[in-house]
Length: 173
View (cartoon, rainbow, N blue to C red):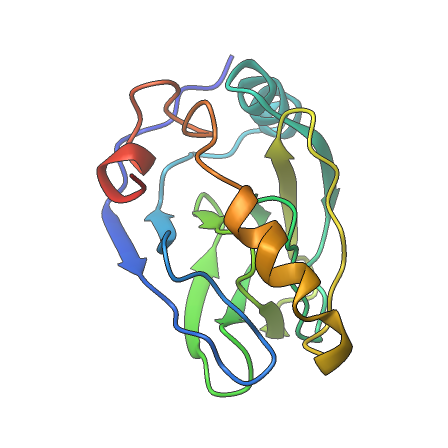
């Protein structure tokens, strides 16, 4: 079993619409810095923790190097190896450094890509339970369909890391 620590720093940013990237006018991007200390068993233990907190369909991989977003659901990324940068919000969006042990909670509609990752970079991704994710790329024809889906994404049942009374609910209302 893996126990998350209180983040060394918690970053939050409400990301406005940027061209055809809708982003999210209601929920801010959340970054929990240095929340996990990784061991050889951490990947599976973190996936189990996410599942217990109602965030499933987990995968282990990297982050795409092109802007994309999910209109039907939120997404959590837990950095398990390496480091790099992730840009949120589209071409004009802010770039954040991420590294092993960091957690990023991406609201539905927020564009993201990785302009620079170390060769060993890996993360776990997951979604609030029972919601399938879609892939969108900031094209005009995605609207107004995605705008309505983003509005319906709503609050998840729990913070993916800290559960039903987690930090997410201090920022997402």
